Image (cartoon, rainbow, N blue to C red; front, side, top):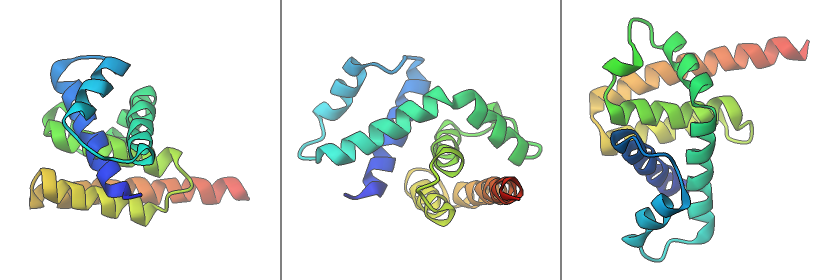
Length: 143
């Protein structure tokens, strides 16, 4: 399975939901996948999991991002960047099976594709802070 494509699709769904103000439901997902042919179920399932879990944990995820993004409010960030950060923060904070370096690199590459080089650097800086703080929390809880 190509997880980057799953992540890209998840970002597109999150972006669409935020712009329209809609809530996630099966009809939205069915409509989203209508124009996309021949993607395997595991790719769609991974995208759906990212979307659902990012939305379920959005308040906590936003709190984590705000703490790491000094002098930046979420509202000030571009919608696409905000949603890249949310999906990647979900992976960094809630998916222990995904290495931090993978989550960060994927977010940077997706930002380069869907946003700008400057956004990729901005996202890298914030996610690096989140990953380092997350690592400290995990290390301190093991003692």
